Length: 361
Image (cartoon, rainbow, N blue to C red; front, side):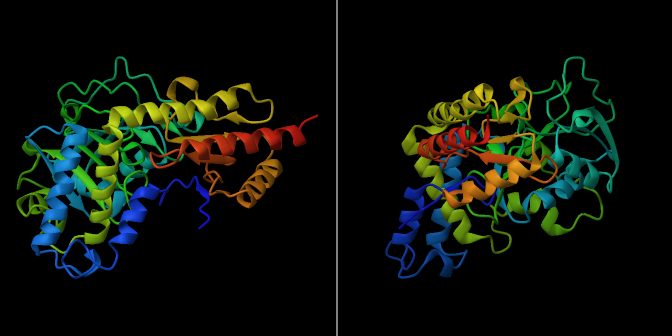
């Protein structure tokens, strides 16, 4: 078997150990006589998978007892609507726009009420995180929304904004479980798992119980109410069973490594390898202000579209896949999620050094 180094922003690389476990259990999970893909979601075997996954996630994130963990479908785009449907009781919310995903979330929320953009970095194509000191939160806002790590533009919010008592809602899709987090500082913390936890098809929502009520916008469908899923332990309808099973394996892999603190140290080491090279390179340079750089998503360019295209083409041949940057930024982007081994980053840096040597005078 010859596996490439997959730098895709999502669906993304999974731990090889997890894939091997899934391979071994493909035909039969435990002594159930069947694959997880064949199980009833009402069976004891699957309930054990689901509840163990939640228990392990609670341990990894030290989730307080007054927060519910929901395994949902629909991805981030559904959450962009589900959040205002459930939380925008006074039809007003504040959004901080730091990239494509927070911008899309704000656009969707406008369908349901007034959206106040209280900070934005769009003036420089989202190459930085705006200063939150003196942030003016709207008195009528039901919540404040952020995307804490912007996958496309490669920025991370390091210091959470002071929301003046308003619930903070955060999309953490591309940094989920990459470092320790204080869940109690958020009203809702959510993410699609396909970037850092599992295969596409599961969205994990961690929400304070105080925000789960029947007091939602009147046209909210049953399936889009958080209370529906909370009351039914994520089993109101048939969930993406196999994908939740894979998430559970990833949680156990992380616990075995030492949890999010240990993972954060590894991620720092990987990111520093690439950023140190970029900072010393005469050909390549990053597109994000240093203080706001993401550990997960690293966009970079040469300054020449033709040279960028050649680099992507040659990198693919060298087994460095999915390195092409998003069209709104251009150039290249390396996603260094938890499952990306440090050997992959070393291989990328070595290839970049060789490319630079042959393409500079």
